[in-house]
Amino acid sequence: MTIDPKIAFWIGVVITCATAISGGTISLTHMLPDAWIPAATAWSSAVATLGTAFLTAAHAISAPKSGPLVPDNSARH
Image: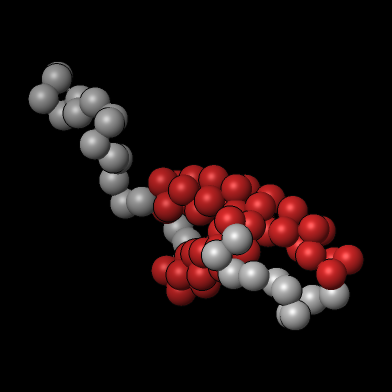
């Protein structure tokens, strides 16, 4: 299973924006009605957290070989 790097890139951009909104780096004042800001911030936090976990897993699943923490069994016979 592989993930197209273009898709991973755009998912990463969305996650970066969600992180900036949920962390307060991007202010939603004057962008959204005041009543919507708490909900938008909460959803951004959820998207950032779950999206980061998804993107990490997706990269691991589509990697061509094991990462550095997987024991190398090629020396064992």
